[in-house]
Image (cartoon, rainbow, N blue to C red; front, side, top):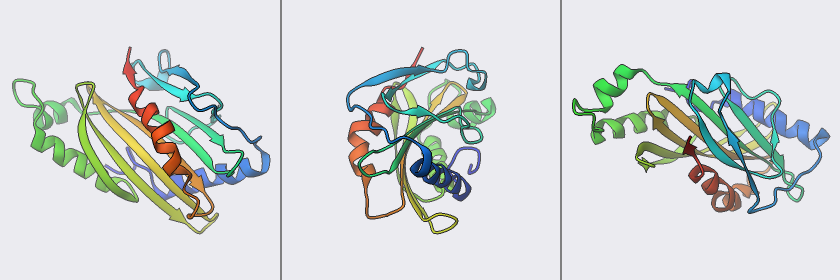
Amino acid sequence: MSESIGGTAARTVLLAGLFFLCLAACPASAQTRGSWFTYSTAGEPAAEGLDISVKIPVGYLIAPEPKPRVLKEFYVVNEETRNLSYMTITILGLDRKLINGLLKSSDGSWLQSSLSAFWRSMAQGLHGAKSYNEFFFQSSPAADVVVEQSQTTPYPAFRQIDTRIVIYGDQLVKLECGDISPDASVNEHARNKPTLCHPFFNSLTMN
């Protein structure tokens, strides 16, 4: 697991490019904290037939061309700091044999030791992963991964991401909540975690 599920240095470059384009051309926006709208994957061809919904802060724009394998990407430029904040939704299929032959026992119960190895492997495959925590979210196996990435070319950028990955049936739902700044000393992400990232993650529901 790496390219199929995680962020890469190439993605950081693409997001940084979006960041600097927005600095030059995008109108500054400010999300109204506490004001959200619901996005549903119903009818989305790339949703693999999965109908889920999440809450997105009012003021976020939809990226016209999300990154490869990303179902939907929302972003906003903070009018005070000019940092770019974004949220993404990705749905990926899992091999049923992996689930039934490795992650679940013959009676259909989850094997904790196998799940732990699975999440550990995933975290290790995410470029810049700092820590991860596994748990059950709405009765489904899940993990939160904290990622930090930096680059100097072609743009100087510092990227901080919180990622939640949930196993629903034979699919993986991955939510990313991140911030990009040209200055590593500007920690917009620390403020966004409790007010934006956590509500975004916890709003995930199956319809």
